[in-house]
Length: 275
Image (cartoon, rainbow, N blue to C red; front, side):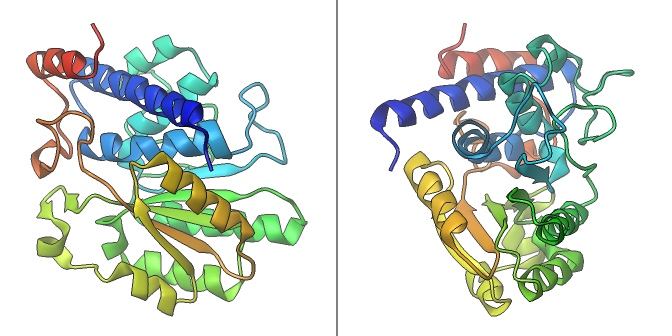
């Protein structure tokens, strides 16, 4: 169980990273607001409380690996990488600029700390399964983490990968599902219903946990449970809020791929307590 000071520290970090996300999106005049904000608490708990990694040695063989399968939420990943020290925070100002290493979707050949290129939905999850299988075959101790979107699991490739992960009993693999209920065209349930997701992954022989994706205690317990689970992969279904942290972004599909305007940024900074 996390101590109260640790919870407060993680909450403070997540709030600071929300500020960074919104500022870089505003400067870029492009990018994905809603899904970056819904996922940042999960990534904060993972990067700053659970995952073994070394910004000073990104190629450390025994590191844990994270794959952002919902690659359009790259601002959330970049904020975590900069906060960790993989590259200077000032680089965040170059998001989506010509020549920047911070592209609209993660690129392993350009950005330190990015494990695989993602963006085409479904493919990152499959690559994460491959990393977990490679780790098993090499006898390594690394854990592999992946973040999916609930709209993303409409892709058939997701279910092929889920079947393979269970078949190979990849207990070194923990996936998280950012279940914010919205995608670019509206409600996930209107575009293509994916529920009930828990029973679906259970049927594929996964260990399934369902949590509040903004509750750091719940996230920490889930990650610990996943590490203790043997013989099958773990899926953490995290109920989240699209645009979480700024009331006028929350629960709105219209901010899926729209950056904050100057006025909205100012109001958001005020709400987040950042001048």
